[in-house]
Length: 266
Image 1 (cartoon, rainbow, N blue to C red):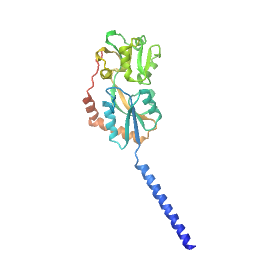
Image 2 (image 1 turned 180 degrees about the vertical axis):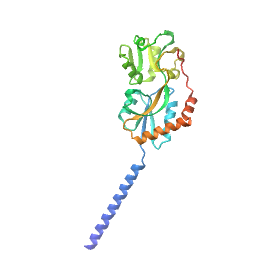
Image 3 (image 1 turned 180 degrees about the horizontal axis):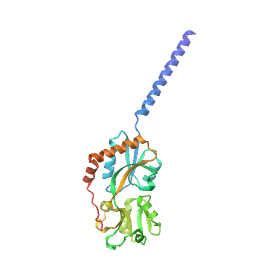
Image 4 (image 1 turned 30 degrees about the vertical axis):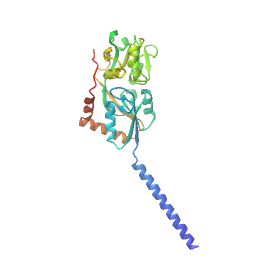
């Protein structure tokens, strides 16, 4: 009987030790496994460019370089802007670029850091020579924008109405083509910096487009932003990484290497 009790005690100790080892191993793994960052964006040359093999563009290079200097794994995917926007709104550890900073977005995203500049303009066809000096002038025409983009939100705030003087599309690919080939579309509201690249990507001559009315006196910032529930330590590391790239001049070097052209402002 005594021998049986000793065996039971021994087995119990072994079980306890084994559970302790498993528990310790599991706990250690939790501490050593780093989060995965899901990064989403849209096709917007030259900031981010959709290719058959991977996502290119100078903003993509900035983001991927910054993420590579952190302990986190990541991948970058391109979707229509509305889908990328909603994925970031609703999924923890999901980040988005290049997103404009607006008052409406301050409480919806964690704005990590600025990564590029943008120049918001009404773009028209050179042959039409439209004279626009205000939003009220623009309301006489049909303007196309990207759904859920800052340009869409801006025109809604200014009193534009879908179907009346506002035409909404789901992706950047079709925006310039609409302006060039559909007579009912008079203008697009877009980043003037990108027009040359986007025109060439769509096999269009950049010279047929002109900057009709520039909204901002100086360039606005594009941001890298994350879901509002993303842990603070992740945001801190990402912000630090991008800051280091700014201080070292690495971001300026990346932009210089791309040397994207700007259409002339009238």
